[in-house]
Image 1 (cartoon, rainbow, N blue to C red):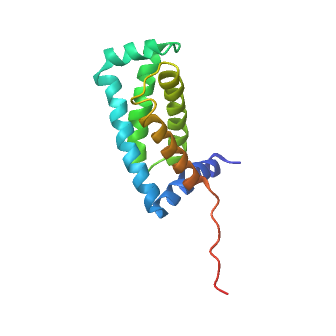
Image 2 (cartoon, rainbow, N blue to C red; image 1 turned 90 degrees about the horizontal axis):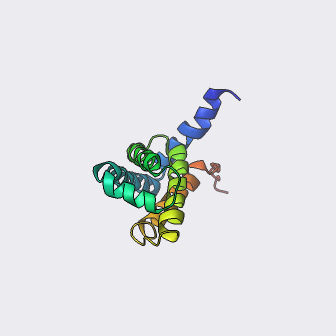
Image 3 (spheres, rainbow, N blue to C red; image 1 turned 60 degrees about the vertical axis):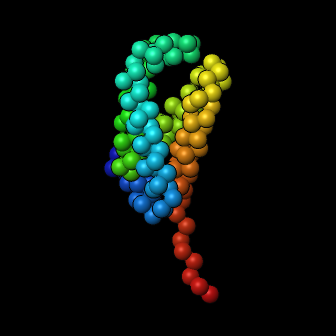
Length: 142
């Protein structure tokens, strides 16, 4: 399979499907804005965020904090623009799973790790389901 074919299946078709779904479009925009600001927090409040990441017990907390900030900020922008929706939603789903497991369950942080993170995970899974499902041909009236 050629790179162009893979890119079409992973990027262009899902992005086009998102444009056909009004609810999914709204979810992508709202989640994108939330991720954008959540990512910015990791830079603006670097010291307190780094302290939190250290308490999670994850390896390389200073690297992971910056990585999470970049992924959430860039991913948020791409979602809000409705570009590369499928790969971005997949990556952000993993990010939310890590947040729920390490911060929420592992560290007992209820807000935002056991409130907002699960909602964002559900939103990302919804977007993946919406944009990656096989299109069904329209039935002709009988």
